[in-house]
Amino acid sequence: MTTLAIETSCDETSVAVLGPGGEVLANLVSSQVAIHAPYLGVVPELAARHHVEVLPRLVHAVERQGLLADLELVAVTQGPGLIGSLLVGTCYASAFAYARGVPLVAVDHLEGHLVSPFMNLNGEPAEAIPEGALTLVVSGGHSSYFLFSRGRGVPLNRTRDDAAGEVFDKVAAALGLGYPGGPVVDRLAEAGDPEAFRFSPPRIKDPQGELDFSFSGLKSAVIRQAQELQLAPLPDPQNPPQAALDLLASFRAAVVAWLLAPLDVLCQRHRPPVVAAAGGVAANRLLRQELARWGEKTGTPVRIPPLALTTDNAAMIGRAGQLRAASGLWTDPVTLEPYARVSWKGSGERGTGKRLFPPLATV
Ligand code: KG4
Ligand code: ZN
Image (tube, rainbow, N blue to C red; front, top):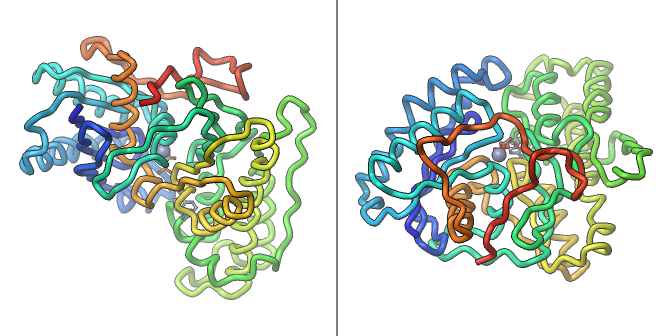
């Protein structure tokens, strides 16, 4: 089904058009980084206001290219995210679908990240997601492995405190490196010594959560170390001294090592046919290299999406919408309401939330 997709969960306004097989025909992303950078984080009211201005322009742009001529489906992010931002996207998508008489499907933002490793930007159809695929979703709000099982993304672990992307952002902010922190830390870390500083991994005693992540201790340790070295904030952020580059390289190496640490155990338990990574932190160079290396060493196929599909984008929402539509999971445009918080909590099937991910078809 030719699909128009809309993503406004946080600070990127994105509109995509997909062909019936998940071919990405357009994937426009308007970043608000410059608007939020002075505040070192996303200001929800500013984000929502900017979505109101930009979203119609992006939809008009794909319409002018003639991409909506055979429109059969509208997909939109329902949550989790900033409620004001989500309201802009869901109201626009509902009105658009209703007015044009096109079916609507609402998608969980994480479902989008989960399907993204099986998409491409070459205009080719998306891959079917194999049963048992194991995907690390790692972004500004989430750090979890998911098993794709019987059409559902089942969370296998979670972070006990901060998400990995959040920690990149907070360390960068403490050093005066601006927002978002992940890309700049990643770039500077390339010139540092990853073995200059050692950080001990957290010990989670709870046997139910032995594979869970915890990053807030690392964040505090890195910021404390930077303060001791008088690097927080950096006197000249454009020219960080070697000690700062070494600290950032050691920090990045620790995050990546800890993110990949559960892989061997998870693979022994679940024997996944493919391992994937998704979300903004999957843009990280070291994470991409190390996961690819792990795949070669163990002979496991690995999927990492192209950079433009790692950070928030509407193309992944469109594909998740197509899979939901294939399962008959339509949304009523008149009653659609966004949700701000994740709809599941805890690890594995023991989740205490309303639901895990709803079933996606495995077409
Ligand atoms: O998926 P995303 O765009 O939004 C959320 O759903 O959160 O992820 C944004 C996060 C930010 O925390 C950003 O700093 C991080 O992804 N990020 C990176 C890199 N590029 C973006 N973290 C580490 N290395 C990168 N190259
Ligand atoms: Zn995201």
